[in-house]
Length: 94
Image (cartoon, rainbow, N blue to C red; front, side, top):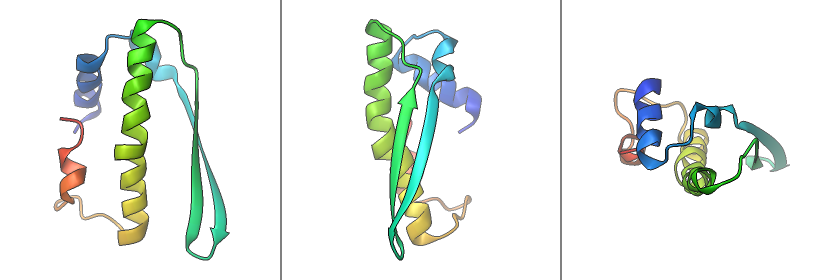
């Protein structure tokens, strides 16, 4: 999916002005033991109001269910074959 298509997909979900793209995301990685790492995602830059609430609801699901799940899969399964993605990679964002 191209960046333009992804933005278009987000606009179907909520109509927050393009400023919503100025969120800040920070990932912290902490090794707990060999081959076990805790990943913490911190987001900031949220606004207020109904549209921001919709954006927050969307990303509250998208981060754990799509983005972090893909990150976990990549580190468990190894580098991706982009011509043959697992089902959950290609099905997200529809």
